[in-house]
Image (cartoon, rainbow, N blue to C red; front, side, top):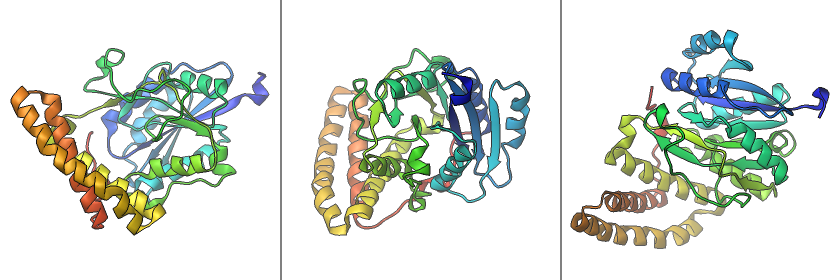
Length: 309
């Protein structure tokens, strides 16, 4: 492929007042393996109107191996910052748009693996696993994340590890819905609508991203809160597209199963002293209560606050 038709990938990273995580993320992005037939530009969008990440990004720019952009998006919210990144990616004429979170560090072959899979499977959207770690030196040794066969269609796609054709935006008119600015789920909603457009979504198990988990996210309290708010979000997304009464019919049985199952798992955890069984009980209780809260239109804007640093 000649240079004048070389495809361009925009690697997009939203951030907001997490300089240490962002620095780690950008350090690993700088070391990414890049396919010979691709040109890569990196775009950091800061959702802090004080531009607190500017000095960090501009300090890295002289030695950064690829073009590094920095923009400030003063309109707060998850969908707002991601839409700004979409606009910036289109402005640099990207053929493909990749998303990472600022608390993540991709494996060296992450982008090349996504690009290779996109070509192999003629895919429009490619995504891979996210593995949680406590420290960067755990990269490569940690395991986890979703497991699925290569080339199959993932049930859900998120923006913490994804690459997709820019035509989803420029031609199909897909944008992130600002309804989800502070409750999350904007990425699930975006790619559900992408699937409705008959775009080809593909799972790529070798395209691994590691998520840095700060200490406050390792507690049972956070585990409960995450699954509680996640369940609320599931109800709100379903209700937004299919209506209130169908949501009751869909989630009432799930709610009952979770709330009946949680005490059983808790009892089993007490008898066996099995930590994972205990965590399962917490997740089930949180999800059941979250489904109930969502059905009663209780909304928790969990992304008003920032965790990590």
